[in-house]
Length: 202
View 1 (cartoon, rainbow, N blue to C red):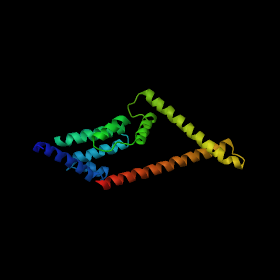
View 2: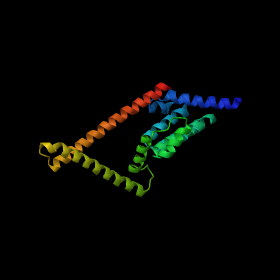
View 3: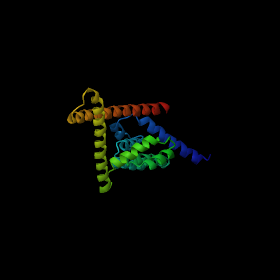
View 4: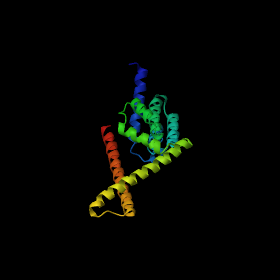
């Protein structure tokens, strides 16, 4: 390998190591970071994308690329591509960008959920028709969940003489809310476990 190519790879590896070392710091600490400024800004950009804040993520990565050394910029651009694809709910682009980073692509289930989120909650800047479509899909989803909850309560109450419509709607709503809360809690635990496993593997 030519000396220049080896130097570039070492620089890129150094950027990745800096990012890994800073990941446990708070947003405030990363904002104050001066030694590894580009790595800190890249982490902030990735965190903004996880909140689906594409505007903030794009700004952080722009600043990170500006602050980075030439040898580090390609890796940060790849991180930016993956993060912005996530923030803007673009499953196909996310899969390709993650593969370019050399990481395992998201599962089909994760990509489906991201695509569903893109339909229900279009990214900022989406057209009026997309936002209206998202609103109606959310309304239909709520009605569907309430209908499922209502049906389950009616089925459970049937051996005991049944339940009034108002009571079934109320208990059905509570059942659906409890189910969503449990699923959200399990999802967060699974996400935290996966993050801990990735950190331990480094």
